[in-house]
Length: 286
Length: 332
Image (tube, rainbow over all chains, first blue to last red; front, side, top):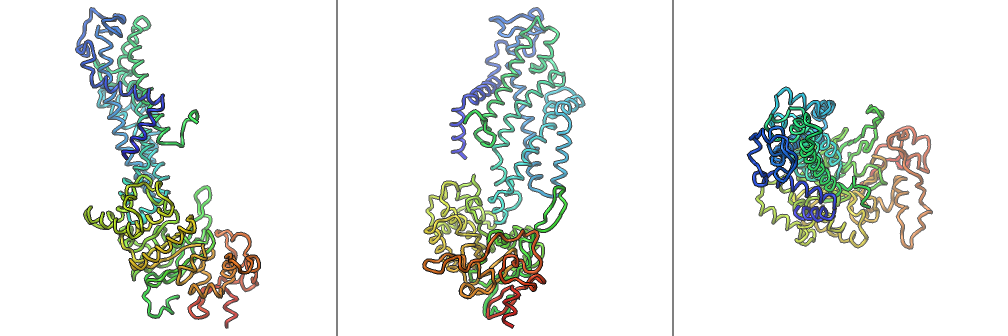
C-alpha cells in the first residue's frame, strides 16, 4: 500500500493539471487553518463598521468592504472554513452511508438488494438541488442542516457506484476463490471487494467534493445556509446582488473563490482518475 | 452404482446422479430452457487415488469440480464427502467442510487478490478456519511454502510479480495450509511450458505423499492424465461416457468417443493421427442436445438404436463402465 501511494504521488507530480488542482486544494486547506493569522481584520467576521461600507478594493481592503463595512478579504478567508467543513462532513457522511449500502446491495442477490437500490433510485429521481432545498427549508437555515440536506441527497451516488463496482468485482476469480476457501461475506466485502474498488470511490469522492461545494453555495445563496453574519461564500454573493453592478468586487471575490476551489477538486479528481482508473483515461495523454 | 467393485477401499467422495443445469433466459429474464452442464453424473473417489476427468472444452469438467466444491449449487443429485451429505448445505456448514475439500483454479494468477501480497493470501485460509495466533500461522505458512519449493522472500511479493509456475505453487500452497483430504485440480498444467509442467506434476505427487491427499485431476491433456491418474472418467457434454482404470482405458477404449479422443494424441513414430481420427466438427449446442445418445451426431457407428434412448453407464467388463448402446450389445 505504501508503494502504491508513492507511485500515485510520483505520477501526479508529473501531471501538470492535477498539480494545479493539488496546489489549489492545499492552498484552501492552509487558508482555512491559518485564517485568523492571514486575515488583516479577523474581527470583521462579526463586527460592522457602517461608515466604511462598500469601499472599493485598495491596499487597506484587498477585496473592498461589504454592505456592513466589513473587510471582504478577511471574511472570504474565514468562509473557506465553512466551505471545507460542509464539503468534508457532507461527503464523508454520504460515503459512510452510500458505500456500505452499495456493498450490501451488490453482494446480496435477494430482495434486500432490490429494496436498497430502489430506495436510492427514489432519491436520484428528484433533482438533487431541489431535494436539498426542500430539506434545508423544512429544517431551517443553519450549517448543520445544510450538511444534513447534502448528505441525505448525495449518498445514492456512492451507493450506485459501489453497487455496480461490487457486482463486477464479484465475477473476479479471486473473489470466487476466497468464497470457495470459506471466507465469510463480511470478509469478502471488506477485505477483497472494498480495496479493489477503492480507487473509483476515491475518484468519485474527490470530484463529488466540488459538486457539494457548488450545491452548498447555492443553498447559501438562496438563504438556506448559515444565517448572517456568517461569511459563507454563497450567502455573500446573495447579499451583493442589490449593490451590483456598482460594487462589482462584492460578488467577484466569493465567486472567484468558489470557482477556484471547485476547479481544484475537479482537476485533482481527474488526475487521480487517470492514474487509478485507466479505463477512462483522457484521450490527450496518448 | 460404481461402488460395487470397491473392494477393500475406503471411499472419500461419492457423487450420485449429480446434475447442474444453468437456466437460459431470454431478454425479459424469462427462463426458456436449460443448459445441462452436468447431467446425471455418478462417480466414486477412493481415498488416496488420483482420479482423472477428461473431455473437450465445454464438456462440464470444471462445472463438475466447482459443483463438488460447492461453488455451484447442484440442481439435483447427492454429493457425499467423507460420509456426510454436502449438497445443499447451509453456507456456514459448507464453510466448515471446505477445510477438507479444496479446489485449485485453472488460472491461479487471477485466483489471487491482486492487491494482496502472497504472504497475506497464504495466511487468509488459516485466519478464516483456525484461531491460531499470528506466530503459529506464520510458521505454518513457511512450512507450506517450503513444501511447494518457494523461497520465503516471495511472501513479500504481489501475484503479478511472480511467474505462472510460481503462481500455481502459491495457489496450491494456499489450499494446503488447511490440510485438506481431497483436492480438485482444475487444469493444473494449462498455460505452463513443458519443463515447468514436469516439475509441477512431480510436486503434486510429492505433496500427495506428504499430506496424504486424494486428487480429482481435471484436464484435457491426455498424456499428462495417463501419467498421473489411477482411474479415468471421460466426459462428453455433461455425462460420463467411459470410466475405468487409466491404463485399460488407454489401451482398449470402449466408447467411440474415447477411441476418437485417444487417437488424437500425437505420437512420435506412431501411426498418423488422421488415420483413426474421425472426430470432426464441434460438439452440439449443450442447450439443444440431440435425442438419445448425445454423441450420435458425431459418431460413425450411429444407427436407429442410438436415437431411441440415452445410454446409461453400464459395467460391462471388470472394473470398467461405458455408456454406448453398441458396446453393451456386443458383450451380451
